[in-house]
Length: 324
Ligand SMILES: C[S@@+](CC[C@H](N)C(=O)[O-])C[C@H]1O[C@@H](n2cnc3c(N)ncnc32)[C@H](O)[C@@H]1O
Image (cartoon, rainbow, N blue to C red; front, side):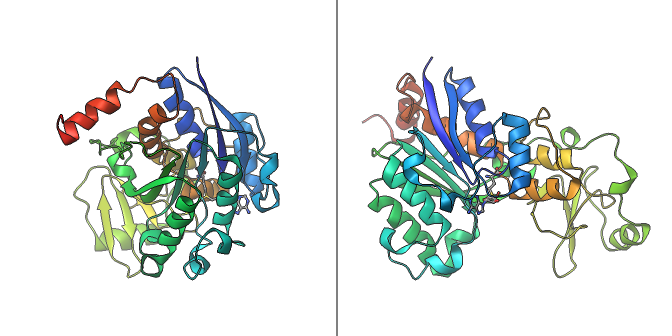
């Protein structure tokens, strides 16, 4: 069986890694993570407990020459470069941003392909200039680049979470982003049956919410926006690392448990949660939705693994564009 080597940058708790491992197994490929990095020690604890390997810390301190060869680079990089990248021109100018660390690794290692993930706001930031510089820099490095905004709700998860996904390949491949798949998993498969009392909001909060809103759904997640308006859906709004405690309430009554949050991000139940509730909330809120990136990886793998047959790719091409 063919081995596919990858690196997991800004790896957090390993959302990309789970997606890649599942996608490879479904295609009789052997995934091998040859390098991972995250600066947060609690993320390192979670990653180590689940993958048996502790990620390296600060990527800005890692010499690209010390990173092993790999076929695919994954990175869900932090939003930090947004405010500064827009005024820059390209590779020679982006130093000091965390995106530069991705670029310098790509420049030196030249993997066949990469998948980057970021918040949807990247697309409109600074009137589109920030994303334009990111794409231009990746193209300067010799990659063919495509991007799309995808929603986790369209890939089987009951969470509205929109993310920009940037895919690059050294060759001009016929890659297209995966089509949406519905239905998404019902909340009945996400919510735990027995939940500790500590997750319930105070009577005061519950009464206040219920006086304002009545849900149309038997199982729902209630969301209160900044203006104090409440809405509820049979799915969750985006989990957020720094959200206030009562930002999302199951049936208007209780907070999500860590396991429910991990399920909403597509992490399987065998994933061990080894940190306290507040860290788990932060980790789930920062993670990449596994199902969403897995759908992207499944479309990309035929262009990375030489043993995979291209029939499905070509069939899709015929369906989309007609036979010649
Ligand atoms: C948006 S999160 C990515 C989460 C990941 N995709 C997952 O599924 O959990 C960004 C991550 O970048 C990490 N990070 C920030 N600065 C870093 C640095 N200088 N070196 C390495 N990791 C860094 C943060 O600790 C955070 O976990």
